[in-house]
Amino acid sequence: MTQRLRGRVAAITGGASGIGEATVRRFHTEGASVVIADIQAEAGRRLADELGDRAVFVRTDVSEEADVAALVDTAVDRFGQLDIMVNNAGIMGALGPIDATRMSDADLTIAVNLRGVICGMKHAARVMKPRRSGVIISTSSPAGVLGGIGPHIYSAVKAGIIGLSNSVAAELRQHGIRVNTIIPGSVVSPMTAGIVVDDAHNLAGAQEVLGRTALLGRPIQPADVAAGILYLASDDAAFVTGAVLPVDAGLTGASWPSP
Ligand code: NAD
Image (cartoon, rainbow, N blue to C red):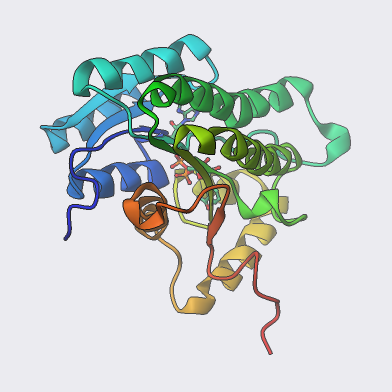
């Protein structure tokens, strides 16, 4: 394994589980110091302890600006800088038909999935701009691009992340900061397992999506998405900004059904 992130410092939200955890592990293997941010304190601490050197857990609710500010400050205090911010924490949020939407559920979905990314970008930019260097990567979803494959509010905020990311990319390139979006395909994680268990309507959708993404021969794993995030974070992507990278076996880009 090359050390593509040797000497870099990365903060990863939602880092205690699923895609975030896989990203934490891959970044650490590639030589980065990692700041694991999550509301799941026990799992986050356990992961930091397992990785040992160059890993710290910071209990963070991304919808709380003070938490995200403290996360970024911890990266700087502990490791001297913040090179890579991965805004990955997310929840599925409100399920069901639009006319049954509970506004409190909608507000929570927006707060975690979109406000959380805004907070991450704001505070990462605060410390990256003076150094004229940095990378910000945020996790969207195929549901932000295609209708009918995710819950309504989730789809709306995941589309919002792409617009936000492209807009911030245009601003921050003059400061030497790259800003990109990753689109994971359907990955089996605690989040998607939740759909299968909780909601019969979405179960059919989830199976349909999994059927499509298995087209490349096997289901997508969190580590496959982490590899895409690593690419965007690394110097191999030195001229990649304002980009949206799908790691989705062609779900958003390829036609279906195949010829
Ligand atoms: P996951 O549930 O395994 O991980 C999400 C993590 O975010 C959890 O550790 C959770 O504790 C954390 N989190 C939730 N609310 C938080 C908050 N307020 N503050 C901080 N942390 C919080 O799910 P995952 O599949 O790894 O999802 C990671 C990201 O990928 C999410 O943004 C999700 O929307 C996106 N995504 C997932 C899939 C998929 O198929 N799994 C597909 C497309 C996009």
